[in-house]
Amino acid sequence: MGDTHKPKSTIPQLEKATKPELLRALESSLGSSFSSEPICPPPNPLIIVISGPSGVGKDAVIRKLREGRENLHFVVTATSRPMRPGEVDGKDYYFVSKEEFLSMVDKNELLEYALVYGDYKGIPKRQITDYMAKGYDIVLRVDIQGAQTLRKILGNSAVFIFLVAESELELVDRLIDRKTETAESLLVRVATAREEVQHIKNFDYVVVNAEGKLDYAVKLVESIIDAEKAKCPDIMVDLPVDVLHWPGTVLCGAFSQQVDSIIWDQSCDAQRNALGTPNYSFSHDAK
Image (tube, rainbow, N blue to C red; front, side):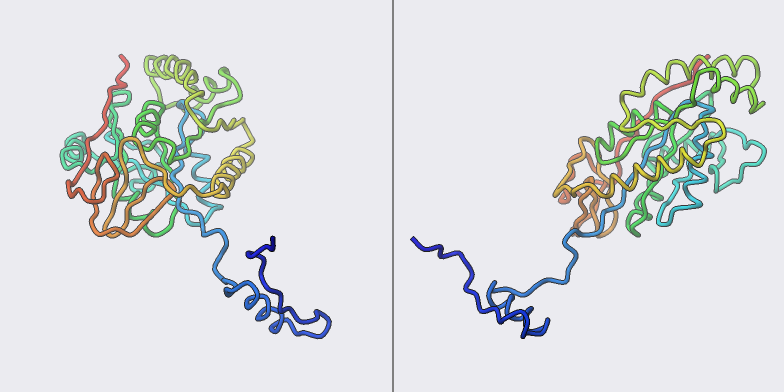
């Protein structure tokens, strides 16, 4: 029985045909033209969540990462804590009063927020949606409990990286050298850090930011981002709790699609027009 699916060959002799002639003959034999479109479409923007105990160097890693990588947006966290020496408002954090912060909560402007060591911290939604719409990867810097909350919201659609020092002693040395704590608050941070390290298993990757080896830690983070963007794309990744939406576009994990209506909801249902989403809050106010 003959193979009816085998293409009929009309290929000229290779040594006598030009490349355009060969291409046309191959297309004719196959019954379709060759596409010039990329075989694999460009990867969609990533959300990278970087967390770890106080003193592991989250800010230093992110600062260096931003210097060497294009199309990366660091979401500036809003906080009610006082500004530290060397920090810049709008670059390191948005420094607001507690009243201003609670107003942002009431207006549903935050993806998640927390009370950490007596001060509020939260992630503005608008920065994420605006920059992902432009094709930027998003970097979020959060504490451990903030990362747990984001895991509930984003599921496996974000990449979670845990930063650690090379040892507990090194971490304590860094906290002492910062000279930003009272004796009481230093004790709280060290005790909290011991507990937080137990959550490593809940992250996708662990990066050791060893003393004097910042560049190496940053390269590891960049390698993680590159590996994630080189993964075979999913057709659709449904977020278990919430999905980011903005006008004209809905993002469901690695998949983006033009839609008619836009919302922030709990079901990835583009037909619902409810605005806003529940805020996820918790208290980490150790005393």
